[in-house]
Image 1 (tube, rainbow, N blue to C red):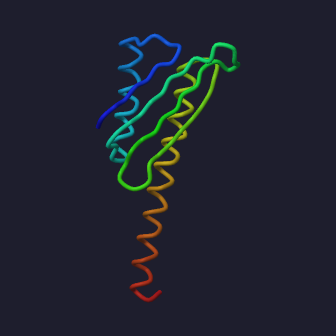
Image 2: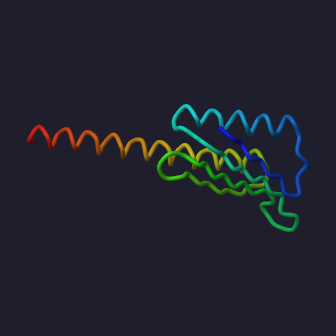
Image 3: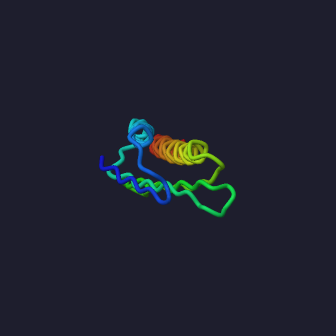
Length: 108
């Protein structure tokens, strides 16, 4: 997996970058991720001041999340929740589709 991490109006810190990388890698257990584009933004004159955008390039449809909060960790946590929900939802839909196909082949 390739990770592209972009900081706008924020300093890149090793602890922050490794924490983000660890969170994204954890998602890879549930779905194959070929590339992750993460954008961390601090909006100077806005409230909430932190914004996180994540674009996961995956086989099939890509997965996107965007969130804002008063702290960077909270905004990132919200984005991760959105990503997990999308990944879980797609996996559930796929499983239901497979079950209905098997049921249709059996005739009932």
